[in-house]
Image (cartoon, rainbow, N blue to C red; front, side, top):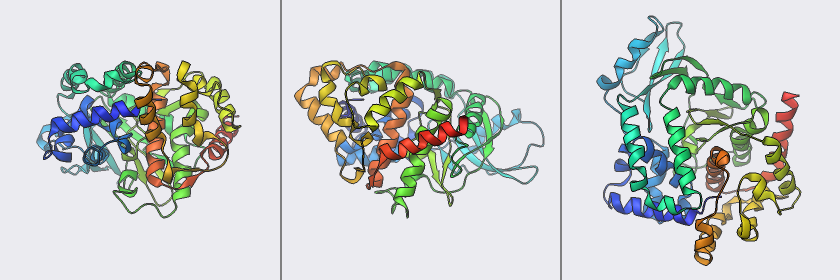
Length: 383
C-alpha cells in the first residue's frame, strides 16, 4: 500500500508550484515522467484539496498535442501502401505521443500512435529532474522504489514495437472475457504503432464527476475487475496503466488501449494464496502475500483489506484513503518507511487505478466474490 497522505502532500506542492491560474492546461503540457507522476497522484486525489483534484483529474483526459508537421516524419518508416489516409489533427494526446485516426489500404479504420520527436532525450532529462519535482514522493513509504519502477517503465515505452507485443499478449490474456476488447496491433516501428481503433468515450469521461455515470454500474464494475486483474490469473500479466483514461466504454463492454506498461507478475501462487485468505474473511498474513511488508503496522493496515472480504463493499462511502491519512497522522515515522516488494509495483499501480475507478462508480460491489469468479474463468480457460 502507498501512504496516500504523503502523495497528497506531493500533489499540493505540485499544485502550488503550478499556481492558481495554470490549471489543467499547464499540467497537460507536462510530458513523460512529470505527466505520469501526475496521473499516479490523480489515483489518490480524493484525499487532496478540491483545486488539486480538479487539475490532476484532467491528466486522464488529454495532454497538449504537437503540430502535424513535427510528427508526420515518423510515418516514413512504414511500408509503402500500408496507409491510405491519415488525419492530420490528433484525436488524443498523452505523455509520450499522440494518436491520429487513419485508414488502411484495405479500408479498415485504425489508430496511429506517434511518439513525440525527441521524446527519448526529453524523457531522460525529465526523469533526472523528477526527484526535484516530486520531493515529497521520496518521503512516501517505498517512494524511492516507486520512482525507480516508474523510470524503468517509462524508458520501456520509448519503443512502440514493445507496446505492440504487449498488445498481442494482453489480447490473448483477456480472451476468457468476451466483453473486453484490446486494440489489436497491426504494424509497429520504434516510433509508430498502427492498431485497431476502438470507438467510444474514455471511462474517465463517463464516470462522475466528469460524466453522468454509466447506465449499468454493476456490469461496468465487473468488466473493470476482469480488465485489470483477469490477466494476472490467466497469463501472469498486469497492465500497470489500467486507469480510467486508458479504458474505452463501448456498446458491448470495455476497450483496453495504451498497453506500454504491461508487466509480468511473479509468483502468482503466493498472491493467490493471500487472496484466498482474504476472500475467506481472514486478514493475518495477507498483506505480506500481496507484497506489502507491513511489520509492526500490520494490524493498522489490515482494515484496507475490507473490499476483499465476504459480501459487498460500499464504494460510495469508501474511506480507505482517509484511513491512510489518519494513520499517517498517528504514526508518521512508521508509515514513512513502509516498504513493499518492488516486483509488485506494476500490480500495485493497477490496483490503485481500479480502486480509483470503483470509488468514482460509487456503488456497493462484492469485489471479493467477483474476483473469485474472475479467477475461476481464467483458470478454466487455461486448463
